Amino acid sequence: MTPNDLITPAPQWRWGRRLFLALVLGVLLLLATAAPAWASIHTYHEQPGQTTYRSRQSLRDQRDLAWQATVFKRYQGQTVQGLYLRLVGFPGQVAVDRQGNLQIDTGTTAHWAVPYALDPQTPASVLPDNVSQYEVSAVINDMPRPIPLTLTVPLVGQSSTQIIVAPYVVEEWITIAQTFPEP
Image (cartoon, rainbow, N blue to C red; front, side):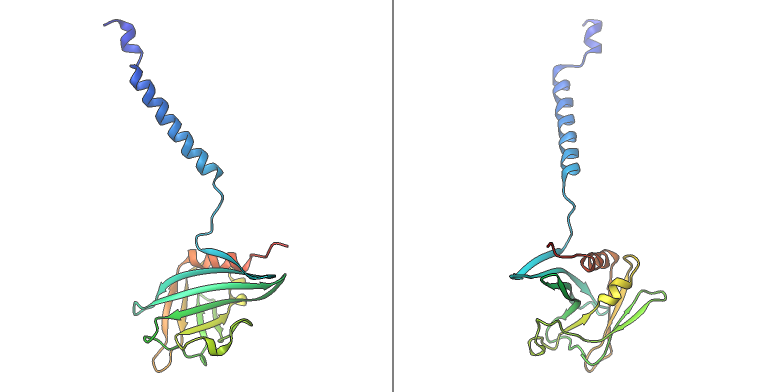
């Protein structure tokens, strides 16, 4: 063994280092060129001139019942038809009281009472009793940043139920409120 053998790494080490370096550079390149993604925001072109942006999340209430929370914003051409929150409880387990208001709280000083409201595309007879819908543009536009929310949903024949909404969901809702259709 010569002194040069101790200084120079064996050829298999050179190959391994090069492979490792290539993998690291490849991952960094993928991360640098990746387009930003919205986790669950989808765009629908429902008919010519009509675009809907939607976020759908599954949330649980205080009794551990699943609710589907969908925020959607529909445009007819460049005219917004509203920003709506649709809450869907499991059929047969809940019936939403459409005469009562949805209460939205931040846990601090902000509180909103939002009445039941349908978008122009949805006839009242279409929604079953486990579905409620609210026009929430004033609420979402009033939020300075994504914060946790508590939704208190009025129910028929029982007390209301509470649903906690995480900040990342609220962030999607704010993003939809700030989204405009391409001309």
